[in-house]
Amino acid sequence: TDANNEGIKLNSTLSGGSSYPVFEMEANRGVGNTLGKLVQKWNGTQVASIQFSSGTDGTNKDDAHIHFNTASAGTVIERMKIASTGNIGINETSPQQLLHVHNDTNYQGILINGNGAPRIAFARSTTTTGEWSVGIDGTNGTQFVINNSNDNSARKVIVSSSGLTAAGTLVAGGHCTAYGNFIVGTAGNGIDFSAAGNAGGMTSELLDDYEEGSYTANF
Image (cartoon, rainbow, N blue to C red; front, side):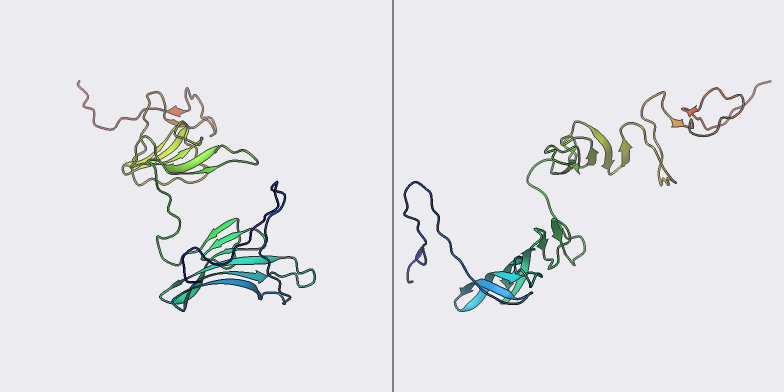
């Protein structure tokens, strides 16, 4: 072809929308081999390709992978793979989860941006609304939050440049080391020792106040 938008066209002419065209490639090879490939060249140099390779079932020959490759400085490298299991690998040839991102450069991986409060959400089973989420605080963009919601309505942990704030009761199941102060932000709250053994004559299991200083007695 010598003009733009020319090439191969598969057209279904049957009226009523009851048919569709198919571009089919067939190969009978062993496991782990290329079955077909679509190659893009730029002035004679290969710069991208989509490759189809056979899976691991050499008896039934009913599984395959799809590889997406691009070139940087003339060398074509696999950038993304959809395995026969459905797992997707970004820069990973053997993806172990539904999405597996591999990067050998420190502080590189996944970047989410585009709005004032980007978020990663988690939900159980078939629930489509996030039950828990983490991300940049929608109230203060300089903070990072863990939310018991898909939005900013139930902030449980807030991390800022000044420290960590917990909304509600902070429970430590093991040792807790602080390189700063524990600040009780609401009067009447404190450190609850109710899970510990009772001391004789005790009147409260809540340490809600402590003062440090000096006292001079007058006689």
